[in-house]
Length: 135
Image 1 (tube, rainbow, N blue to C red):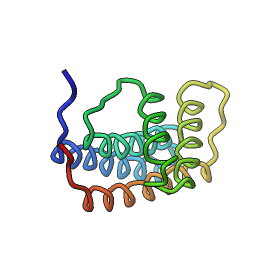
Image 2: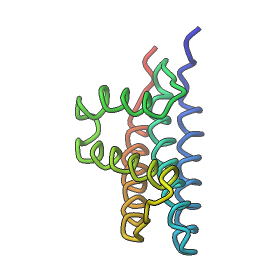
Image 3: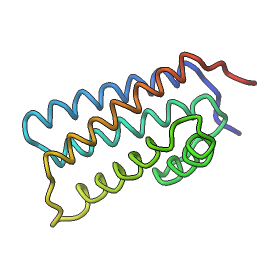
């Protein structure tokens, strides 16, 4: 059974992305940079998943979500290649922040994570507003 294609699910995921972005900003202001990196990445992740809600696909693993998005949306230039590079970097920083005990978080990197999440969220919102579900 394939996943249901749903504009409502896309909107719900976009709302999750917005919430994660706001949490990331609050954590950044409180100087919890590792946690802010994590939440900024999840804003990015939920933004991507919002786009994928318009297709009959779903993935459990982050890398599968990103690979599909890169292949079908970045490489085809539905979304700019520059945002694809930023997403890849954001994923690496999130992994380092979460799993590398010796990773030193720089506030500038966290700020970049947040800006990437904001940029993607705006692009996805425009995409969703212009999309119709193809059955």
